[in-house]
Amino acid sequence: MGTGEIEKAYRLARERYGDIGVDTERALSRLERVPLSLHCWQGDDIGGFERPDAHLAAGGIQVTGGHPGKARAVEELRCDLDKAFSLIPGRHRLNLHASYGEFGGRRVDRDEIEADHYRGWVQWARDRGLKLDFNATCFSHPKADSGFTLSSKDDAVRAFWIEHVERCRAVGAFMGRELESPCLHNLWIPDGSKDTPVDRWGHRRLLRDALDEIYATDYPPNEMKDALESKLFGIGSESFVVGSHEFYLAYALEHGKLVCLDLGHFHPTESIADKVSAILTFSEEVLLHLSRGVRWDSDHVVILSDDVRALMEEIVRGGALDRVHLALDFFDASLNRVGGWVIGARAVLQALLLALLQPNERLKEIEEAGDAFGRLALFEEFKALPFGAVWDYHCARSQVPIAAAWRREIAEYDAEVTSERS
Ligand code: RNT
Ligand code: ZN
Image 1 (cartoon, rainbow, N blue to C red):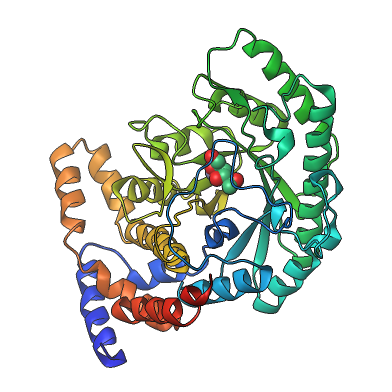
Image 2: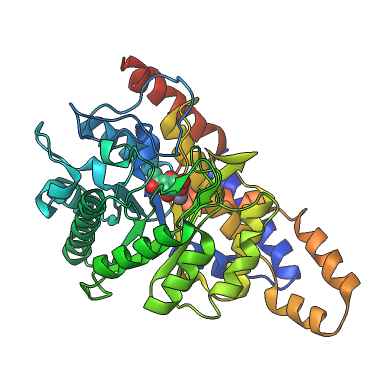
């Protein structure tokens, strides 16, 4: 489809949306300002660059699939990220894990990392106008093999991880300062047990105390912010997860931290969309990990699913876009990894656009008038409106290829670059 046709289709779509009181231009200019935080770990199956001592993904997270071409070094990962970003409309962020530092071939343990190991990333991001987010890496490490890190009953193990997370926060603040955009530091730990424990209490108290120690250092919010990510269960922590939702929600509210809701970390019938208004009634901000669990927390590539759509609708209806941080979190090694990034990122942006293309004020009036039929009928009506024409126009205007063209680019990149890697 040429530019003329894209514009023609868009003009018609704009009229259709105009008929129900939606201004597509306004929706697009809002969409353009929403950053997604792209997770570096989709590019190499959460491998990181701690080689030669690299540990495979472990600690309740599991990558499956054998598609060739994962990034083996920082240059390859950056090249893949450049490709991915070139196919996603908008200006976004990169979310790094501590294990992706540049350690110069040396063994730098987690309790030794420093800002210097991330200077290359900061420079890379600056050159591209990207901002950075950061995560402590409390898994895939011998000192996490017991299943406990910050809540370990072994004082030395706990101290090791406390040191790591404290350093990660300092790195995050460094990134935020350098790039003049607050770095979101997210903390997820694998702590828990396969079978029913006797002492849940002890581990939770230890975790609370460890967090108190970690967060004793204050960083200005324009440099970094802290988030805490809960989980329902993991492989090896089926019966007990120390950092459960209630635990972190309580901790975060008491200490002015953000909670991170990962879409794969709740009971499959629980609605994350429903949680946003509950949490944001009491908390300033929230972090979302966009993921797709299939039967369990399987971290499939995000697609334009009903739950992602419902989530974006809730955020838009609450006028909460500035209070929600959107980050991708999935890892699929069964398909082209760059393509996975792009599918996920585009899906989230599409869901957001769909939400922005709804006459929310009018819907609220209908609801308040008690017209349940009218509300449901309108919900159904949007589904057939020409959303695709608005999306294509948005991509074209953002100088990002549409439909078949972007798939071709991924196929070419796979043939020329990623499939050449052994
Ligand atoms: C694990 C959490 C966590 C990780 C990343 C790699 O269940 O979702 O966010 O996916 O830190
Ligand atoms: Zn997550």
